[in-house]
Image (cartoon, rainbow, N blue to C red; front, side):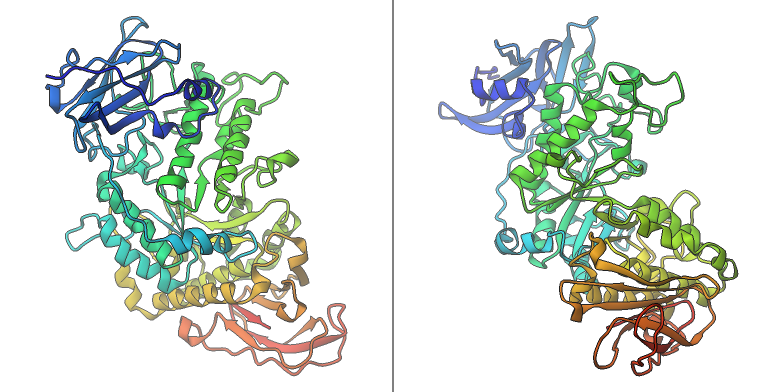
Length: 633
C-alpha cells in the first residue's frame, strides 16, 4: 500500500500567519484536499495537533489501521501534521488517530476542516471537492449590496430545514427539493432574506444544530454540499438573501469532535470556569489562543466565500461577553480589571467583524445578544463590537408580555409597548419572533394571545402590524406567518394543512401585504435605525389603549401614519392630529380587512380639518377597527 509522501500546501508565511492568529483562509490549507503530486493523484491531509506524539489517517482504504498512513510533523513548531497519500480521492471516509504526549491519551477524531461528513449517528469525515457552477453572478455583483444595506427593507424568514416541511413519508426534504419548494414559498410571501438555523454538521437532532462537530460541512441530512449550494443559488436567483446561524460560542464534547482533540485542551479553554458552559453542557472556545481565533474567523469567511452566504447571525453572543454568564458566585474569575467582561472574547468578536467586513463589505453580521452591553452594532473604530445589527430581545419580551394580557387590563401596561422607543436607536435593532419563543411550553404565538379564536387571530395580526411599523428590521420564525397553533416540533413538518382555513390563510395574506408595504414605502426602511425616522403622534391614550405614530423617510411626502387599537372595542370618530399635508389620506393597510380574516370594519377617514389636535394644526377623524392597525399615507 502506498505510504505517506512528504508534501505541503503551507508556505513559511502561512505558518507565521497561523501562529499569530491572522490566517483567515485556513480552509485552503488544513483538512483534506485532493491534489496531484508528481503525476500521481491522491489527497493531501493536514491537521493541527501540537500535543500529539503521532497522527495517522485511518479509513476504509487502510482497514482503519493506524500504522499504515502516519503523517509527518512540521519542523517549525506549528504543531501541524501533514502528508500526501496517493490513490485516495473524493468520497473516501477517514478520521485522524492521535497518540498524545499527554499521559498517553489516544483519540480518534473527525477532521475539524472536513467539507463533508457521514450522516449522523455515523461520525467519519469524507474527502470532498466538487466544482459547482454558480448562477448568481447578478446577485453577487449588483443586487446584494442594495438588498443588504442598512437603509433597505430587511424582512427575515427563520427556517429549521429539518422541520419546515417533510415528505408524505415523514422524511426530510433534500436541499434540491427545498431549492424548489422553499424558494417559491419565500418569494411568494415577500420576505427579503431567509435565515437558516445551523446547517453545519451536528450529531444530535434535539440540539437543533447549535452543537456543531463539522464546522466546515453542510449537514448530510439533506444531501451533499453541492445540494446546499444549489439551495443558496436558487434563493439568490429569486433575489432572496441567505443568513446563516453561526455558533462560535460553544461546541459539544462528543468523542469525535473538537474537545480534548490531541489529548490536550486544544480548542477549549483549559480552565473549566472559562472552558465549560453549564447551561448547554458544552465546551467554550479558548478565544485567547491565536490558532483558535484563526480557526473560527476562517470558518466565518468560509461560508461567505464558498457558499455565498449574505449574512451571519452570531448565536449566544451574551454568553461570550461575560465571564459570569450562567455562573454563581465563586464559579468564575474576574478579568485583569476586576470586572466580568471576557476581554479575550471581546477582542475576538471585534477581529471577527473587522475580518468579515474587510473581506466581504456587502454582507452583514447580526448579534443575538440579550443584555444591555453598549455598542454591539457600533463600528469597531468607534469602540463598538462591529456587528451590523443586534436582535432586540427586550422589545420581543415586552411585546409578548403585553399581548398575552386580556385587553381590559392593557390600559395599565401601555408602557410595555412604548418603553422600547426610549432605547430603539441605541443599536441597529432587528425585531425577532424567533424559534425560542414557540417551544418548551411557551405555546405558539397565536395561542399566547387572549380571548376567543377571533380575538386570538386579530391580536396576532395586530402584533405583526405593530412589528412591521416599529423602527428596525424584522424576523419571523416559520409557522408564525400562518398562525401555527401547536408549538414548534423539530421532529415533524409544520402544520401546513391549517392554511386551508380562513383565519390561517388570512394571517398569510397579511404577512404578504406587510412585506409588500415594507418594501414599497421608503418611510418604513430608509431611517429604520435613526430617531429621525420615527415620531409619536400620541402615546398617552392609555384609557382607549390606542397608539398613533409617524414613520418618516428622506422625503416628507413619503411619511406613513399608523394607528393601533389594542382592544376589541371599535374606536369611532377618533381624532388624530397630523402634520401639514395636502390632499386626502389614503389607507395602505387595515389588519381588520375581511381578506385577512378580520371583521371588515373600515377606517372611514374624514377629510383633513384645520382643527388643532395632538399639538398639530390639522387633524382627521377616523374609525380604528377592533384589535386592529391601520397604516395610511
